[in-house]
Image (cartoon, rainbow, N blue to C red):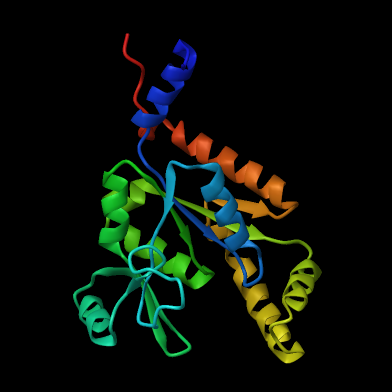
Length: 217
């Protein structure tokens, strides 16, 4: 059974406006791992489900892993301005629906976005014309230091040739220069330290006066 202080804390959290937490990083920077750990630590947080035109992989479920669209349906949604952000990767289209984010925020849920630097820039720009998204948006840029750490991570994956790795590192150097456009800069340490600091950001943003309601007296 919860004591009074625990109940008061729970009520305070419920009264806080929901957040749209956007985490970005250079390729291989560790954002996917951080997002997975954050979702495990914050059961009240949900991830944004991306739309895609690629075929489902074994075990994937529509509306759980992705929203699977035909190319025609995706294009129709794109022309209607339904996507907050979209991109084409290896011949397949990916996008995040505005309705996906707004629906969850209106349910009072914190929403987590895992996007690349270019996608983050688009979302920041698009949110300027969507007041609900702009109020909720909190952007975090995760980067390893020095860049040799990123190179080591990419090599450990064993998925890319040396020339591809060097190309990714060149892109990463450009992406890192964009850190000033984010609300927070998180220089990566250990996985647990990255999680601790991200949780601290979430809690601090929850307590901003514009997102909180004072207790009843």
